[in-house]
Image (tube, rainbow, N blue to C red; front, side, top):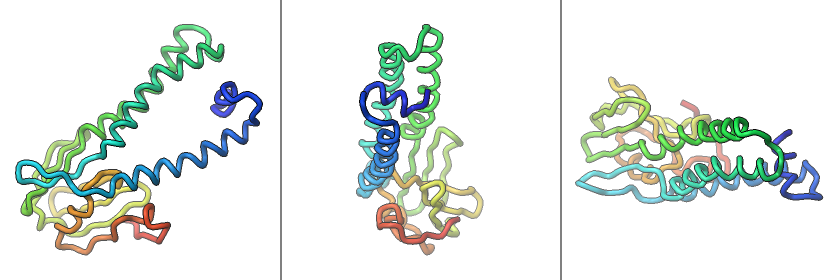
Length: 193
């Protein structure tokens, strides 16, 4: 059973293609809305500015965790999935998709004080990088993030769905891509890095 067929059980009388079209239209609208939420000033605490995910993104992660329980319950109620093992497997597969997003949203931190960039991530060790070691800044449409290339510390990736990016870009002494990216400006071409 496809996802459209699964949704059609809750919207009787609607053809499958209608549901697929609705999903296809909702996804870019949701991404645009998330990106619009991120056009906010950076946080300030303890003398540092900070790039962080928006509260909206954190609420969406909580809603995704609710899907771990709700979707298997709906599938069981609709008779689409039979057996406890299948329901547990379904919940585990959904949780496996939500967990990395939860770790990213809660664990990402990029701070600066004018002289240093302080990075924190669940995917790699924390770093303290001199601001003047940033050699170039680019925007990756594939990753939907700004990429700060440094001399000795690799690449610092700043996701577009975080707030405070304009403040961070203003700090850099290198040429930076325009902000907001094409996602928010209506599709102008960007250079990939």
